[in-house]
Every structure is written in structure tokens, then in C-alpha cells.
Image (tube, rainbow, N blue to C red; front, side, top):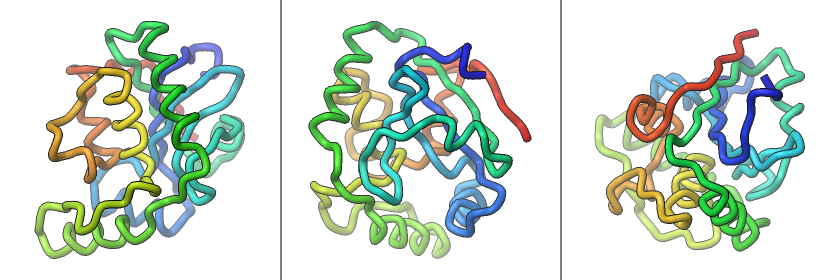
Length: 170
């Protein structure tokens, strides 16, 4: 799978073990995590450690993950470099645990998730990916949706802005 990856590909994961990941998958009926491939076997992501660069092998060498690879239909080097610049501008910002909890609560109450408060220094994973693309001039969602983007919403862009490149089941 790693041979097929290009800079800017979006990777979505399903985790078969982690409680929070399984909860996200159950609530959204989709993947639990989103990240962007930046080359050299690394991804930019917002996760437990905040916004960071991680080794892709963390996901590909574990039997806990299934990985779906999406490629933006109009990817250019400029778009990728802008996405990477967005990572640089936001690295080390924290993970938005409270927003994740609020999203779960709203979904369980059958309400549309929304930003209750503005977090300028924290992200959930899919929000980071969507805002990185927006920073690069690629508007994937309506402006009002950027604070509530789920990995499932990104997956739903297959056939529109993205095409599925591969799927890794373990």
C-alpha cells in the first residue's frame, strides 16, 4: 500500500481495538481517524499528542487498523505544499477532546453537531484535514461545517472531490 501513496493523499482508519475509535465508528457509521500523507512514510495528523507528524507504520504495521486511501482529484504540488504549510502553522496544537465529547452527545441526542465554543488552538483529526485543504484553497464543505467535520464526512466525498485508491483490510 505504501508504494501507492502520493503526497496529499487522505488516509482514513478503522480501529478494531481502541474504545474511543470504536465509539466514533459506531456513532458516525464510518472511519474513526483522518490524516494526510506527507511523504517519506509519514502523515500529518491531529491525534492524542496534538497536531504532529507520525510514522505511517504506526498504522500499517498494526493489525488493529484498516486503512482507506483517498486521493483528491485535482491535487497539485502547490495544494500539497499549502497543506503542509498549514501543518507547520498548527503543529503542536492540542487535540480537541471536549469538542469530540460534545459531538458524541449531540449525535446521540439526534441533534446536528456544532461548535459550542470556538477552539482556535485545538483540532479533531478530520477538522484538521478539512481545514488544511481549505487553507490550500480547496473548499470541501460549506463554511459552517468546518468545525464539525467527521472522518465519515470526508469518506462521503468519494466520487465527488476524492477517489478511493486502496483499502487495506487486516
